[in-house]
Length: 510
Image (cartoon, rainbow, N blue to C red; front, side):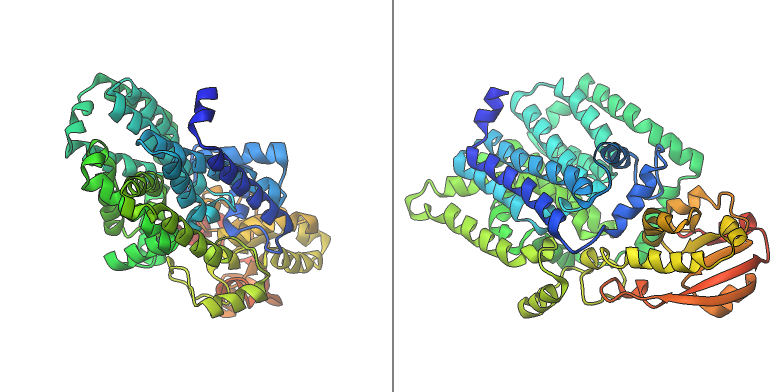
């Protein structure tokens, strides 16, 4: 441990600690609320399973443990993401060190992580994405050790970590495919001829097996989810749009760091032993283009590029005429970070943020096919949930005691359903239904259809399903996504057919 602590420059430790406490402070003082996905993940954490329609189970299990220990405050929910992203800062510096870099290379690699809007944003809310970045960085360190030492036993550890990573998010599988391609086209292919590789693959498969069995048991819902997301949800990008999205999400001026890093890995003689990482990046980039993936899916690939870029700039600085290169790159990246930081984390009150974004003229890449309001989606999805639950709760409280005892609330998506579970309990709401993602798998429970409060939809189509439909109110929200505002609340009585018969038609994966 002492050797490890000495390997990392003190400035890197300071950057890591500063990032951790920065995130906790922002969560403690912000006027922005819980993020849409966090509300859904909390609902999932109450129903632990070996899988969910839209993700494997590991991050949800970690959230359940986190809630058990720390509770549900914003600071508590953001503790693990903040901690993990701070660890990634150190891991990037360690990658630079293991690639042969010195003090400046370590600091530049760490700066690349701290300066990335995607990374710093991922550390500010709970999701599987922050753990995905961690698992990619951990695998980079393990494979780097394998390349340097030739110790094929390392494949066993790689397999175990990859299995855990796959239990968090499938994108680790794409990273592994890219690494295999990188190894195959370089002299490092000799490392693939090993029984330890087979042992590592077996270990990873065993770890991942419970989730596969869950998929089989439930009819492979994740494949349907992915297909629907590609068809109806994810905004299509061409190669240039995907590349420019990388620039925006990693910090445009960070290209001064990871660009040289990619060149060092792919072209320069000093990077030849590690060429597999450069090939991996290109391979995964192309795979995600073909898969119509969101641009941020490639985000976890950058720690190795930041590390290689730090080494490359440090080597450039060894020439007298280029001694200024690392300092100029660091200064430019830091300046850009200060400018774009309010777009990554909710630092500014809404009106000041809107004014600032108009003045700067920066818009985040649009990765979904939705109309946007005054805020980008990753901020808009932190507003309106409590107010929505309170409005529906007031309608619920006006029902007769018998009606409340049988009433269920049906909503369109998992954000609304998660918010009602989280905030609606104070109004007595106990049955929350939706056809969206895992809420459909959880089913209608003991809801009878005698009384259902429905949020959204049009009156005519709702009347076709019920004997009686009354308009009872409206949900409005100034800062949330437009499709979450101006939603009518209907009190519906007498479902014309059994709810369990209707349920298959309500499935909405994506």
